[in-house]
Image (tube, rainbow, N blue to C red; front, side, top):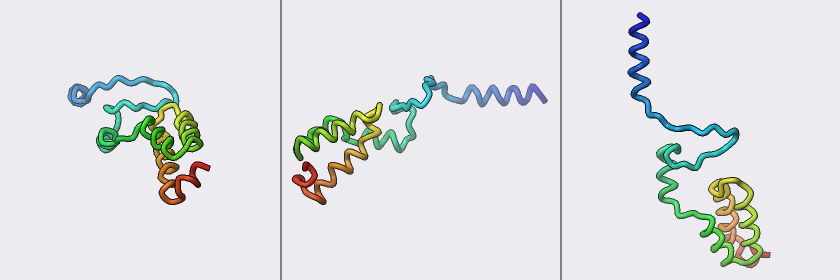
Length: 102
């Protein structure tokens, strides 16, 4: 019985991919291979970048650019701030550029 279990375990163990793992407490990974398929596709299709958001904020005004720069520096990985920055910059449509920049 033990030999059957052992051989079944070896079949399963050999079928699993080996992925190197870095253990850093509380750390996030932006390695595309470690993301779910839906996130990988989203990341490839997305044209969001810190530089793009900074240019967009500069088009609105210097105060907006300063706030966006501050938000982008809040997290270790800038990608974690993109939704917050996008929400801020998108509010220019609703409230106007002058009001957002003041």
